[in-house]
Amino acid sequence: MTFRVWAPLPKKAELQLGKKKFPMKRDTNGFWSAEVSAKPGDDYGFLLDSQGPFPDPRSLFQPNGIHGLSRVVNHGDFKWTDKHFQAPPLASGIIYELHVGTFAPEGTFESAITKLDHLVELGVTHVEVMPVAEFSGDHNWGYDGVDLFAPHHAYGGPDGLKKFVNACHARGLAAILDVVYNHVGPTGNYLEKFGNYFTDRYAPTWGKAINFDGADSCEVRNFICDNALMWLRDYHFDGLRLDAVHAIFDALAVHILEELKIKVEKLSAQLGRNFFLIPESDLNNPRLLWSRERGGYQLDAQWSDDFHHALHSVLTGERNGYYEDFGQLEDLAKALQKVFVYDGKFSAHRKRIHGRPIGDLNGARFLGYLQNHDQIGNRAQGERSSHLMSAGKLKIGAAIVLTSPFVPMLFQGEEWGASSPFQFFTDHREEQLAKAVGIGRCKEFEMFGWKPEEIPNPQDRETFLRSKLKWREISKSPHAEMLDWHKKLIQLRKSEKSLMDGDLKSVEVNFSEKDLWLTFRRKEIVIACNLKNQPQEIPLPKKCELILASVRGIKTGQGTSRLPPESVAILKVKNKTPAQLKSIARGVSH
Image 1 (spheres, rainbow, N blue to C red):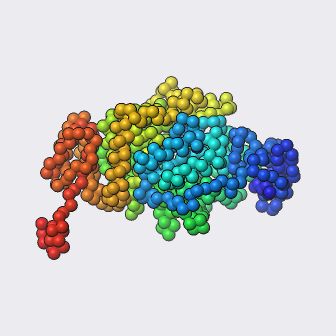
Image 2 (cartoon, rainbow, N blue to C red):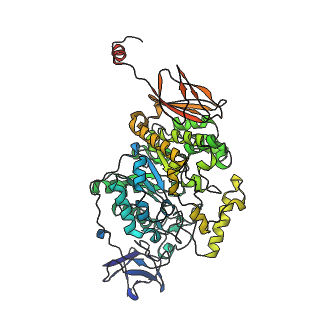
Image 3 (cartoon, rainbow, N blue to C red):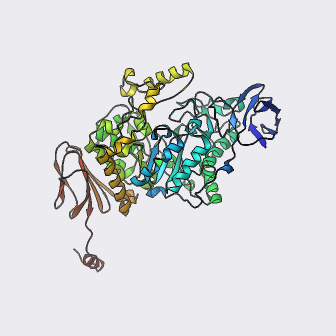
């Protein structure tokens, strides 16, 4: 087989296969190659100017971790059974974000398979997996990956991941992978020994910026695009979530995100499968979703943090950190109708104008959520919403998310109000790096006013173990009741067409800051929320019938509803009779 690697920097390159070394020849484009007899399962690495061996930048498997040799993998050896699977449309989706290491007790791809039936019963349509590219140690959030083509060895490697995706498809679940193209991890990164993968022209938050627009950037761009295409083609993922694209710096005329989307579209046409790309961005910039004709990148949907911040701050009362920009029902109302609360508006937290209006984009181009890995894990104690608010408000939050005009997303365990936190954990083996991570974590939380002694040590294994889900909770109160509430909300969303319609222009919102109530209407469906700790009358359209409620004792009348404290009611405006519709068609006024 041919071993080939892009390495324009060294003057000499050798292949180490097992214990043998083989010379490599260089071409004019900086690629080195060697034709050597090898088979799947063989381990190899590259020596550069007699140093190494280093892992292959495109290593498909690192069985011994980030500093070990790479292993030959033949993707064709795996027997897929999902030939006829097509992912459901995002617009009708219910997304479930999970972390492989903490989702199931064993923390592997195959153990996660045992919990997929739970997701099917819940009503989930898309499973989003946090990053799995090989990272330092055995447990990590995954955003410190360094071998971007290699599924993590402790999770089960390439075959384990393929079994997981295949099992998802067998149950009708689409699979989304979270990928990180804005930086690589702080240890085990050997890329810069091979070529100009990084640049000092930009100063991102997390390590060196990837070289998307400088000298030698063509091969770096190919490296990233090929990685994305591999996950879709060879691992059968249906879509990718692109981490923190605001930290991707590219000044070229065709931005790397646009180039990536074009290449994904070509792969989609070749394979006859539908793929999608979902960026996360802090910029409130709809250009990510706009068509290329309009000057956009034509990505498919994006995370919407403004909706989360508005909803979270209203339900918890928190106003520290970036929540200082939120906290009013007015903000939540705007998010439900306009997506971005900051759409060219001055941000006190940022001390500048932030964002721009989304224009005529549909609500289904945005993901809505009460919780995700960041909003939980980036707290000092990793508290979930279930730790921060009453059961009543938790049900209100779930109802707003699952009846919103956005594509709803849940974070693992949210559906039953899991008691386990999701804390930030790492497993770096270098002592200095481990200390630096802890110090950096404390500094990051200064704006929230959290004390250093309140922050768990990311390197402590107990921090990781505490974050594992406790599946035995599902059948116990109050978790069973919360799970039942989520199931009913998801069933309702799927049964009512107007709830699947992302038409933002049809969303009507009313609220009272003083009395702490909010209602919003999705065509014939009305969601009424009482955030007050006492019962109160809330105005509603006439002729409404109650179809779902978070508590008993909700009474509806002509144009009002009496809601108990911290409760939510979902109602349906009664349709006109056939005779009334016939009269309207004749122009008769009623």
